[in-house]
Image (cartoon, rainbow, N blue to C red; front, side):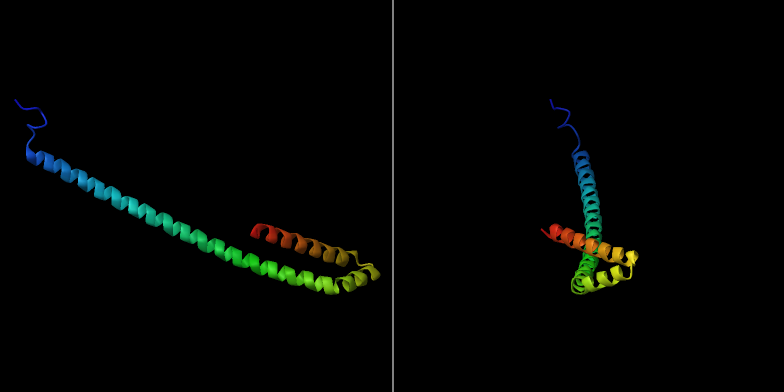
Length: 112
């Protein structure tokens, strides 16, 4: 007497095996496609972050230059603003110095 599995025709087993392999190939192809799409998205994110980093570096450089200028000429600018009673100019200079120093500290902290 034979069991149910051994009584199945060989062709049916081969057909099942072929179908299983086909599904496996399709699944593998879909997986490769998803991975390729994921990598492409990551590469786009990297490009955007690198571009943003370049822009931030430019801003830091400009702010560093502004700080150097204000340190060299700031006292004269502040005295001129005070002597002419131009509080708006004085406040703008002080805000620029404060902002530039804060940005520089933030940039140095984020690089660590």
